[in-house]
Length: 304
Ligand SMILES: Cc1cc2nc3c(=O)[nH]c(=O)nc-3n(C[C@H](O)[C@H](O)[C@H](O)COP(=O)(O)O)c2cc1C
Image (cartoon, rainbow, N blue to C red; front, side):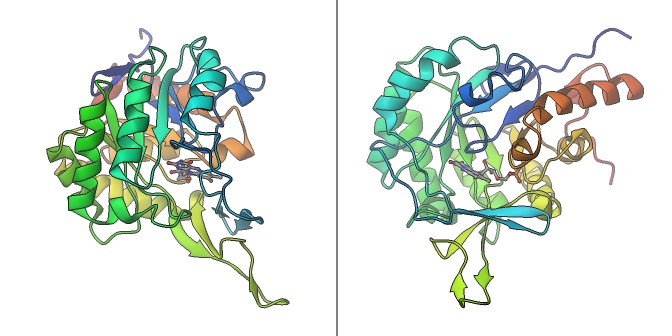
């Protein structure tokens, strides 16, 4: 069999394969340059960047849970100007597509950051994080279809790059939010961000996290994330990028069969920094075994 075709299209963006590194779990890519092959991943989504630098939340910011982690980093970053000056030059040197994740507190924040990135040739697409549970007000935009649409329209007005809206699982009907952002011009949706959670230290009777609550990720959330991706993919025509607890190629394939055009790998990068490349290889092996010529044939092939 010839080498399977693993290319996928996300709006106007073509990826060499459907495996992306998820925002906040892969730094700005450069941190991983000596421990994995950045030319073999479909795309890197960088840590969410805001207009102004942010210090993030007080420690502790990360706690292990059975089958996952709770984090409350709080979008610590140096701001868009420093990102463009210090981080983007390296990203221009790799073959993985560069998706820059942006976050903000107001429509103006989002559109200003998006318009700065619009001028940068090295940026292939923008992922709009409207779903961070660890920042005051960080989830407001993703909980209401009207507000989610508003951000989508502002960002689309500010840039010609493909726009991916990242959705929160902390809502009643995620597919209806996806539908609203599709109508407002989103080129794709990615889901899910983390699930709001908390942990308590029973000796001190205090919350474990400095922020009191955090966001749960890892294998614990996978079946719920998968169900949300399936529901969303049935409802929208734009590509759906699935994530939540993907630890290996089988997990990635589950998301694709349920309707995802591409997948993102988050918490698993902390266990094995080479996992994204391993997932690319594993999917290719599966395609050879099943005699699947094009990865597109896998997306949404769920038999019901
Ligand atoms: C430590 C940590 C930091 C994260 N930071 C961000 C972020 O800055 N922006 C964002 O959109 N998602 C962020 N996420 C969420 C992940 O991108 C992903 O949506 C989530 O963890 C679910 O995928 P996973 O179970 O594979 O980790 C973060 C996750 C973790 C664990």
